[in-house]
Image 1 (tube, rainbow, N blue to C red):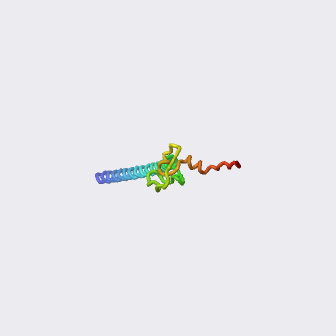
Image 2 (image 1 turned 90 degrees about the horizontal axis):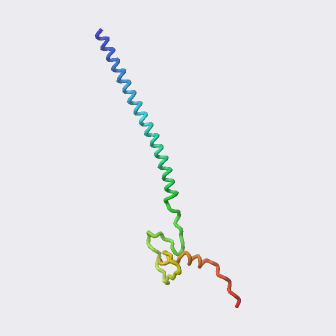
Image 3 (image 1 turned 120 degrees about the horizontal axis):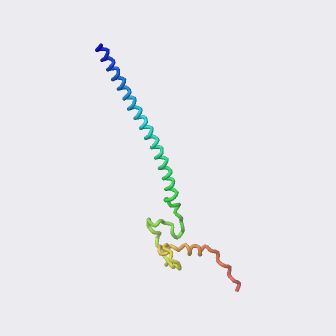
Length: 116
């Protein structure tokens, strides 16, 4: 009788250990799935945020003008041999180039000469 009780007890302990092992494995799988879903959501959020940043914070292509074609953080253009005279208060006029107003005026068609 005692041997039967010991066998039953050891069988119950084995069943309980197997149930606990399965429960731990299931919790581990569930945690991995939640982490995978969280990572996918984070990737999507980061991609959306990056595209928003790209659209809002990154400047467009730097415009190139003949008189001023360098970004302010690099070296200025070479010195001109003539004096710069500007009628505007353009910050670029003093950098060795012409103001945008002067460039537009230079490109404008000249009025025809009068015959007199």
